[in-house]
Length: 255
Image (cartoon, rainbow, N blue to C red; front, side, top):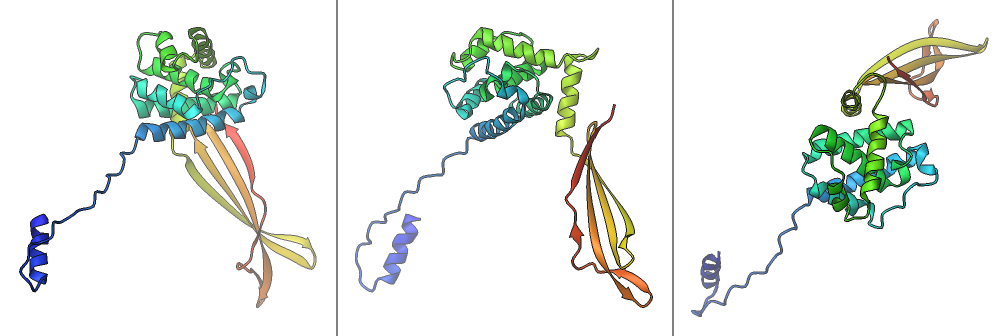
């Protein structure tokens, strides 16, 4: 490129003179995207949301919140983990959602830091680690969470997974599959003419949409009401401006 620039300057100049030195402006390359940092930010957002939705969080916390902000706290755990990162993180998020919905693990709900740490430790231990040792996790938190606390919140999550005669791994596997599975959507429509009084009738379309994820089905029902107009000897709904009811939700759990 410098040689081409010099040739171009000579071509445009009507006088024979030495070409001016070519100066190129230095443009800094964009900083590489830290995918782990972005993942930590997403984990911090979801962890805070899950903890705030759990009834256990609003009781007196058992342990004080670590001084490190949640996002760098999680980032340190992710960067020092020897488990496959994405798989472990997705499983951890699914586990936290299940624990929060059940209102379980009061000790681990002391703070978002403890909640993520407990779920991440159990997920890592059950799926990737053969040696169950709490000491490495103390180092990964820069000593802000002691070994005794790690042990307490880890055992609490493990106890929550100890259901009936099923192994904790089977329960965890169902949680992950249920949370990460794309829901099956089925819509059902029914139609009827509603007579409010002898002089006022309306056409009603009821739409029930069922979303099934794992063993959970949520039904959302919305009713659309249309005015009727006479076309010949028939009453025909006016479809331009329907009135919609507020959606109602109902959740079923299959056994």
